[in-house]
Amino acid sequence: DAGVTQSPTHLIKTRGQHVTLRCSPISGHKSVSWYQQVLGQGPQFIFQYYEKEERGRGNFPDRFSARQFPNYSSELNVNALLLGDSALYLCASSPQGTSYNSPLHFGNGTRLTVT
Amino acid sequence: AQRVTQPEKLLSVFKGAPVELKCNYSYSGSPELFWYVQYSRQRLQLLLRHISRESIKGFTADLNKGETSFHLKKPFAQEEDSAMYYCALSGHGFGNEKLTFGTGTRLTIIP
Image (cartoon, rainbow over all chains, first blue to last red; front, top):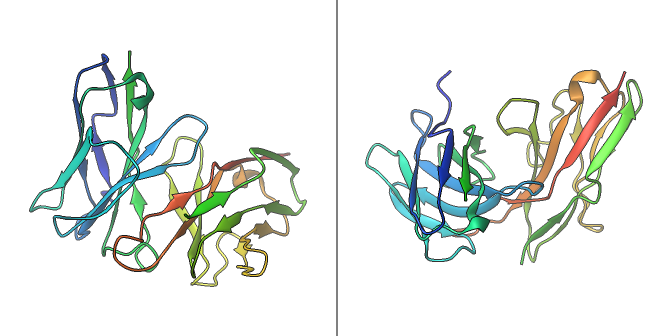
């Protein structure tokens, strides 16, 4: 079963740098969402894309951006990294754009450490 | 604003004893409620959702709109239930379908 795949698994960056995280959804899934999970907290919504269009955006600064490609894979970009951006970044896919009748399937995440 | 509260960060229960993980929510409307679980070294996965009204691995959860609660229950705990449990909610309509998670409860089943 090829689940949601994320790359890289771990990443160490310095303050001020930028980072690109990648996500491949389950085959046939058209929606991709990104979540940030800080240690000791639940995942926090960053973005949702469906059919290559942004469908939702969480309360994150403009330093965070994302896009979805024609093959439904997605990238999350973070510019001007801060120490507080250190977290586990989770990607989730679903067949449709709605959460309630199209449950999310999560990847293993990318662990980002900013020093 | 939507909010999910899980008051217990840690919960230890003896094997065979009943389990109840508490979840309260705040949402101006009719939300959809979910429980997600993360077992050791595994990815976050859906356990159950209230619209399905199903029992998964012996767990059930009833949505109480009066008390704005969605507590997760199991009558007899098993060792394999040890995991991190997250309660989550979503709204309806374009732009409201994001999941809002609680801070999670780590459940440990004592043999």
